[in-house]
Length: 242
Image (tube, rainbow, N blue to C red; front, side, top):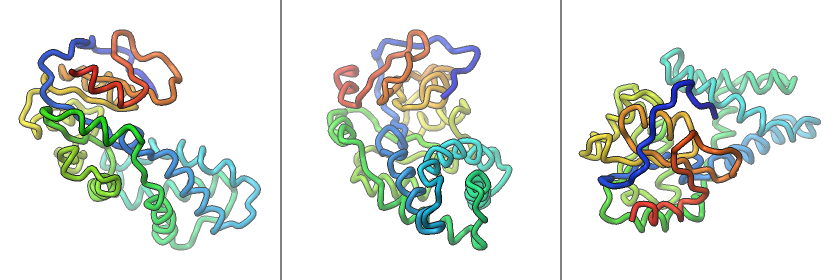
């Protein structure tokens, strides 16, 4: 996670907040654990006994952001970025790429879906925010992100699932993604709080539009940008707002 060179001044008071947007992967859903287990299972089946099996999860994670960025920038389709990412992983591990990359990715995705699990603090935190307009703002693929919300039992509870595909091609940290998401809740950006685990996308990015933000730092790895609130569990969110 990186912080922009010029960080907008945070608004630390929660007065006037009427809506809450949640990031999805890493915030409500344990994406990393599911993805790590899935790529390890895929490689174990594709190349049994591979000596670098233990490296696959970290390599797959490193390839995630740059390849998703290609799709989000319109440089390729979502399917093509998946092919490129899987090919890149195979190159890094010095194994031949599958002849049918789409089928190979589908095998990985099947393992990934099996691992979709909500963080233990997610459902209760959402339930305790009655009275606030709620929504999910995520950079993933619309159909998959909606499926994740269903899988963790939050459909109809956490509000609309908003992605760049539903926000005119605007993905976080584009200012239009935040203003569009606020509008989808029927609110102005300054009436909305965004909660997420990525500093650039979920903390400093929304601040540029006047939106409030809270960094969910589950790992406790580093201090937040100066002045921005930080929590280590979603259980801390309702008291912060109430």
